[in-house]
Amino acid sequence: NAGVTQTPKFQVLKTGQSMTLQCAQDMNHEYMSWYRQDPGMGLRLIHYSVGAGITDQGEVPNGYNVSRSTTEDFPLRLLSAAPSQTSVYFCASNRGQSYNSPLHFGNGTRLTVT
Amino acid sequence: AQSVTQLGSHVSVSEGALVLLRCNYSSSVPPYLFWYVQYPNQGLQLLLKYTSAATLVKGINGFEAEFKKSETSFHLTKPSAHMSDAAEYFCAVGGFLVLNTGNQFYFGTGTSLTVIP
Image 1 (spheres, rainbow over the protein chains, first blue to last red):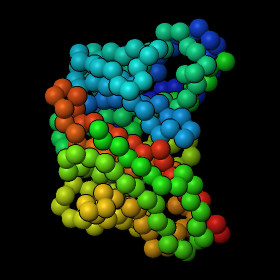
Image 2: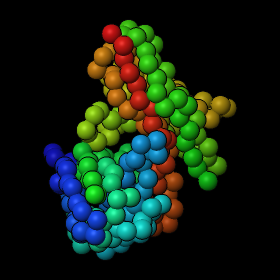
Image 3: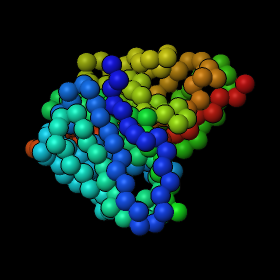
């Protein structure tokens, strides 16, 4: 059981470039989310989805887009990368409408924007 | 509003000593509480979760946490630290079901545990 898979593991972008961070889960989880992790700030929610076709903004959505065409996949798009988006990005999923369902995390994508 | 406070961004203990990582939460409703561990260059792994069945929760790798409602705390402990316990630990509050928003989680800023040989 692969769980949550993120690609790529590392990426370097130049300011203004675009890219997509991929996330896939094989647990049939309804809820998927993207977090960014920065030193001293914990994890901050970027976007989330409660099911295919439904997405919404989290705490820090600016500069990022998401879509959810299938239950399994939840890509995160950076349309025009900025140095402030240098961070480690984590995708997570859980059963959504279940009070005690913990989040399952991918291994992260380390992004550097120069 | 819900929030999580982890006291001490860095904790150092000697190998074999007690590990105590502190977590306090604020919540207007009974929460579901979680501890996660993050090893270098990896994602977060669930250590344990409190879901109101018992106030003392046992997790993986010998860790346990006690829910104290009167103190709004959920501190993580391990009787004897091992070198392999060196990692970042995150406390989280979850289970806030808001219409169409799924299971919202709120994370603390993390505590980095160093184990001294």
